[in-house]
Image 1 (cartoon, rainbow, N blue to C red):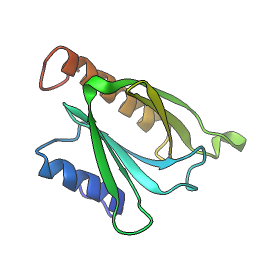
Image 2 (cartoon, rainbow, N blue to C red):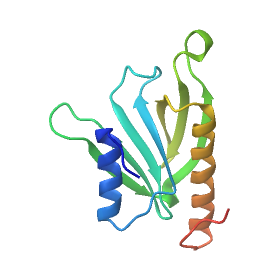
Image 3 (cartoon, rainbow, N blue to C red):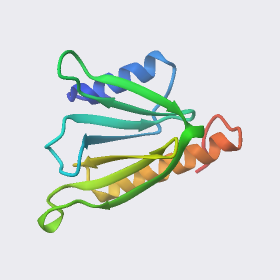
Image 4 (tube, rainbow, N blue to C red):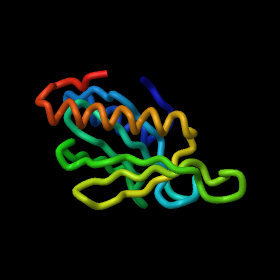
Length: 132
């Protein structure tokens, strides 16, 4: 999985350093409109949810949380005429909603949401890998 997007490449590199394998990756921007926030990415592994976001200075910043703190992921149409604002993705982490927009489309966002749900279920059952 190689990418020319710095945030995506940074996220995959950091996950590899930590010995984590991405189960799903989704490009995102912060805020309600695609392209108006900085480009970042969400990823899920068998144990953690990962996020990379741009910084004003320097490379992207990457963080992760254990799946035990991850709740529901919802996908909604973007704002704007005809969904021109991309697709909205909300991830609940430690009881707080984090909102993003993805240019990847609804199908990719829903696939990511399913991957997170499967990983969380697998982590709750004590499995190292989520069940299909």
